[in-house]
Every structure is written in C-alpha cells, then in structure tokens.
Length: 273
Image (tube, rainbow, N blue to C red; front, top):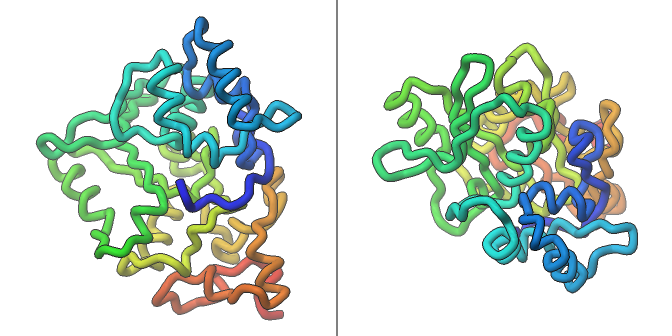
C-alpha cells in the first residue's frame, strides 16, 4: 500500500479499540497471519531482515510490501487470492473478540464475483467489503461503490457493509456492524490518501454514508480522524495538521471535492473561532 506515511503509534491486537497505530508487535503479526508453528523461527528471521525495531515492532508499510510472501510462504491459512493485509487484521480481531462469529472469506456473489467477507453473528448475516484508497483515488473513472452493494443486496437480500480505510480496525467497529445503537470510530493517523485527493464522483456524500454506517460522525464532523488521543484512544496526531498550521500544506487536502460545509471536515485546530 503506497498511501502510508511514516510509521507512528502502536497497534495492539489485544486492545484494538485503544491502541491505534502502524507499528505492530511481532507476536501480533504471527497471530494475524496465523503462522504455522514450525515456521515461527523462519518468519522471525525474515522479519529481522525487514528491520524489526528494537522494541520488537514491525512497520506496517513493510507488512503491506511483503504481505504476499508472508502469507503464501509462512501462513497456515489456505491461500486465497485478493485478500489484503487489512482483511487479515480484521479477521484476527474477529477471532480474538468474537470467536462465535461465523466468517466466510471471498464468498461468491453476482455470478463469479466475490465479496470480501460474509459474516454471521447473533442471528444476522452481512456482507463486508473493505475499501482501500484505490476505491476512491484513481487515474481512471471510478464507479460509485454503492452500485455494487445494491446489486448484491438485491440478489441476496443481505446487507452489504462497506468498511473504508478511514474506519478504525478495531473491536468496537465490528460490534457496530451488528448493533447500530453503538458508536464507532474513524482514524487517519498516517495515511497519505486524504479526502481532498479523491477522484470518486460524489465523494462527500459517499464518505458520509460510509462513515455514518459506523456511527463515526461526531457533532463537529469527521475532523477528529486526524487528531491525537481522541475519545480515550492513543491515536497519534496526523502530521498534516502541523504542516497546514506552518503553511506547508493547504487545508483543502482534507476536504473532498464538491464539499459545502468545509468545517465539517477539519480538526478543531484548523476551524475558525
């Protein structure tokens, strides 16, 4: 994934609601990838070649870069094409926090096409699609992702939940999928894919719709995505804030094309008054 900036903050599989960041403990990497026991020494050697930090953490940019090798050589999971690192992280959170949840990866829908997940929990089924930056930023014309969602819903009668990359990978947001009374969280601590870069048509309404499905819009909007340590979480502040305050970047980088209420998209330090 080329949209990640410098690694910052520490992720924890055991406390995904609170510890938000892009530095992963080696032990969590092993659990996320479901590494074969006999392969643990080999993958540790491999990760050492990827320059594990002294504290025993791995930069997530390296995990994205080497993901295919890591999962295809070392993981005990059956090889499934088109499954991303982010999906593995979500799967690991589900295994740890919701062991009773039924999960099918890459289920067939719409003929020979596939969804990312089919989840069943507490008597309810949902399809889950993880949408990385490439669903929103491209040199080619992008289709509204909800067009595909509606096609799947019309064919199956099952809701499709779209999980965009700015929704935090955590236990709470998985809970929100099945309980709309819960509140979720967004976070963008080191992403270089900012809303102002979106080429997707109707970006403001699509961002809102996806974020509202996780009850992650707050009274002041979505600017808290970039702020540090919000709502009891150890979230690093996105470096874009300091750059804007120092006039090294323009605040419009945070505002999707066509947005009207500009302050809705800005963190508190960049709002007027």
